Amino acid sequence: MDATAETVNQIIRFVDLAGVLANAILGGIAARSARLDIVGFVILAVMSGLGGGLIRDTLLQQGPPVALTDPAYLGLAITGAMIAFFVPFRGIWSLRSLILMDALAVGCWAAVGAQKTLEAGLGWLPAIVMGIITAVGGGAVRDVMLLHVPRIFGGNTLYATSALVSSVEMVVLSKLGMPTLGSAVAMASGAVLSLLARRYGWTLPTEIRIPRPRLIVDYRERRRAARGGPEPEAPVGR
Image (cartoon, rainbow, N blue to C red; front, top):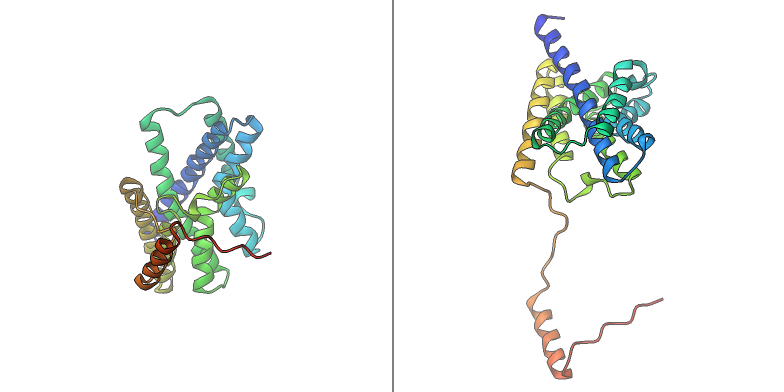
């Protein structure tokens, strides 16, 4: 392994662990909003920081999940829970720091998930899917545990989309024999897209409204005028 690849791998590990800590703290902040006790803080922090990787490694069946074999992951997740339990995080700069690390982690986790899937011998489409799951799985599990619809399903700025872009970049560049460049590009683009989406409020459409033809609208308006009131609704069948 050359020096450049080693440096990139070290950066990826640092961002990976920093993302675990940041997302664990975010899970703890969610636990505080839900008024949970310290057990709830720890569980939400662990699932928020490690959920995506646990799901990925379980599905790939390539041995025990990395989060369980590398003590740094669980240690940082529990540390994040304790930090969120004792620190209220009301300052704007502390929250911005967490948002930045979370954005960096999106691309990093997507790249790691996609690359591990390729190394397991699976194709490009499963690699993209696993990259997305790695990046957003923890947050989705956290939201479900709080009885919320996962924010990645709508009403939130681009997050899963950023993971999709990073996963695709990682798969393409890895197939071209440049996995190191793919990791760097995926991490940078995922972070930039996530931050821009948060800054400008970019979201995906939640529904597509198809306008009714004007002929139908005119017909219903004429019937309503002839009846002298609103058109009664059709009875609901049993």
